[in-house]
Amino acid sequence: MTITKRFSLICLCAIVLSVSSLSAAERPNVLWFVVDDMSANFSCYGEKTIQTPHVDQLAERGIRFTRAYATSPVCSPFRSALITGMYQTSIGAHHHRSGQGEHRIQLPDGVRPIPAIFQEAGYYTCMGSGLTDLDYRMLPLTPSTKNRLGKTDYNFDWDKSIYDSNDWAKRKNDQPFFMQVQLHGGKLRGASEASYDKFDQQIEKVFGSITEPQSVQLPPYYPRDPVLLRDWSTYLDSVRLTDHHVGLVIERLKREKLLANTLVVFFTDHGISHARGKQFLYDEGTHIPLIIAGPGVERGKTRTDLVEHIDIAALSLAAAGIQVPKVMQGDDLLSADYKQKTALFAARDRCGEAADRIRSVRTGEYLYIKNFYPSRPHLMPSSYKDGKLIVQRLRELHADGKLSSLSEELLFSPTRPAEELYLYGSDPWQTRNLADDPTHKNALAKHRERLNDWIHRTGDLGPETPEVYDQEIQAQLNSTRSKKVRETYSRNAEQYRRWASEGK
Image 1 (cartoon, rainbow, N blue to C red):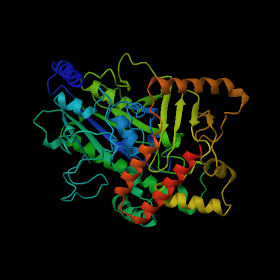
Image 2 (image 1 turned 45 degrees about the horizontal axis):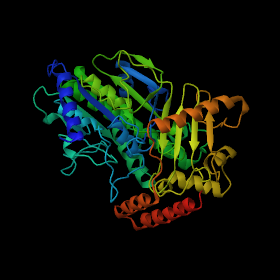
Image 3 (image 1 turned 120 degrees about the vertical axis):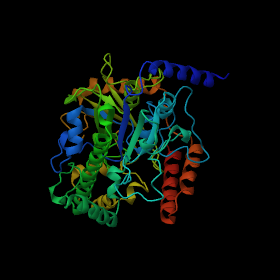
């Protein structure tokens, strides 16, 4: 018997033993709301421009975490970490959309996707929209979408049989389920004027009106330009529609008499997709909402301690009475003996053709960021980012000399600081870098040391080799239909190769 098979057998025995004393009726269902590209812009988190009654009600029923952060600010590394309870840098899944072509990624021994663990414990595992008539965009189901699984986006090889179907309705009588409700979130607004207009029509149909662009508040480094205001108001409408979808799923659980025995976990996969949000380690990119409600969860509580999104896997298994694998790096936040974290960590690596390496450590007071390629600009060439109207408009304003000095410094400086240090509590948008301030010299040194220790302790696998980069770029090109996008992608990739050869 191989070591891997022996480990799997031991795990299975442990799972069976851990749940054998519970009847099917006693074992809670576990339901996740996983939302794309969305920050904590919900009224229970202080958003004033819109109202989000259903997410607010969920918070009233359970625990709202105010300092929950993603360990990665982009979809596939986040989801690879989420579904394993592991730092994406420890399992080799830290480069966005990697392992899709000739280069394959296998999980380390002992690390398994948690749907497989739930399934072995007798749970019905499913992933979809959570509704029987609408999809993840709140559009009517069609013959081609009615049986489709929700978004996975894992960077490693995995067996599709870990999911039984896309909805819990197909389970056996009294069988508990583990359900992921995958929602399009901030992606609903699209990236073009046409997509904005189409989404406005959907919002008007559901709510009767759209959010007024002039009513929104922007981070201080984004100009109050009509293009950016329209994008942000449309984004807030995507938050409203997400909240509405949550309400419909909760109502279904009530109607089917399942809510009382269902642990509901609501969170997003990273912050808003914007120039300094998604893909970056500032609060705009990594701060996420996290709400937990259900059996055994204290009602109406707010927790302000530091938590990471990889903790969701551990707490979900524990709530189901399933032993949490010892190898798992996430923690059960709801455990009676849980020890609060004193530091959180995050990483950004290659996103598409944009090769980068950024790491951060966050403590109760400070956010420390290390840029491994400081000679490269913040808004590096990126077919994904540059395909968005907001980034195109920012580049136009920069070229015309119409941006503020703050915007120029944070978005368009040709280089980046090697180290950044922020008092993020009093500087919520991280605009004042204190790394060169002698007053914070000791804090800088301590956080630098703490990050280096984490990198070594967790086995951070770091950058790709040039050969793997070429394989991943080719895989992406092979899957891209647009000739224009392929040309931009290839041109940008050549730029990154030149920078690497120059030691930049």
